Amino acid sequence: LLTTRNGLLCILLVLLHHHECVDRMYQEIVDVVGLERSPSLKDRPSMPYTEAIMLEALRYITHIPIGVPHGAMEDVDLEGYNIPKGSMLIINSWTAHHDPAIWGDPWVFRPDRFLDDNGELLPPEHTLRQSLVTFGAGKRACVGENLAKSRIFLYLTTLIQKFDFLLPIGGTVPSDDPHDFLPGAVLRPHDYMMRLKRSSKMHDNNHGNVAHFQKRRMQQ
Image 1 (cartoon, rainbow, N blue to C red):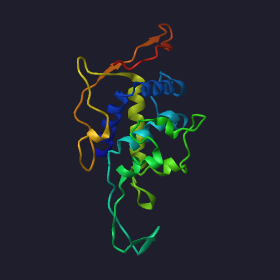
Image 2 (image 1 turned 90 degrees about the horizontal axis):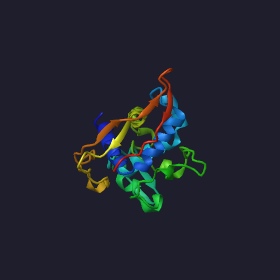
Image 3 (image 1 turned 30 degrees about the vertical axis):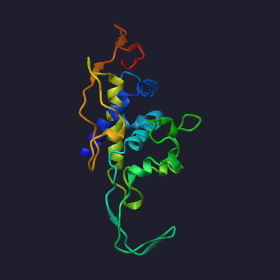
Image 4 (image 1 turned 45 degrees about the vertical axis):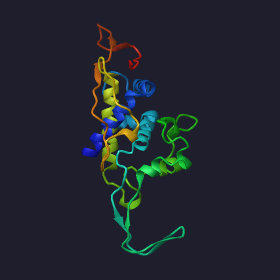
């Protein structure tokens, strides 16, 4: 719960700095879900840009910078490196997620890196997807991965469908650069405030159905 909570706080802060991503995600929600019901997990496969937002946020932020320690069960030779039995093995997620050789521009928040030329999500076997180790890797990966991603999907899509994300009146928000986050086993951003304003929707008075929506822009 702590890791999911801190992850959401980080993602919301990043989205406050990237209103263009919020707009595109909102449009995808309107196209797939509409405005008459809340998003559900059945919508997730039809929302590649939202999924790309989540993957890029987990990569860019890397709120769990160091993985859980594991142990070598036997002597292993890995690309010329001898790893004796009993050695402690720890995935350095921070380095893996910000390696220029893999990502090119690792310190740029760019969800489109996880989409192909047709706007579809890259398959799980793609090199970039395989390079994400937020939840560990292999057979010992975190068993809570699916639950955490499902919770993040529902929180984000519901908030963006129903609310405008606004900066605090007369205030600012801290940097979304992960270097500036508070260090620890789980990174978290500095305390910040944001305003959530109920989205403006025009309803048909006779039928109660959504007749029109006004595309929202996150106000700076």
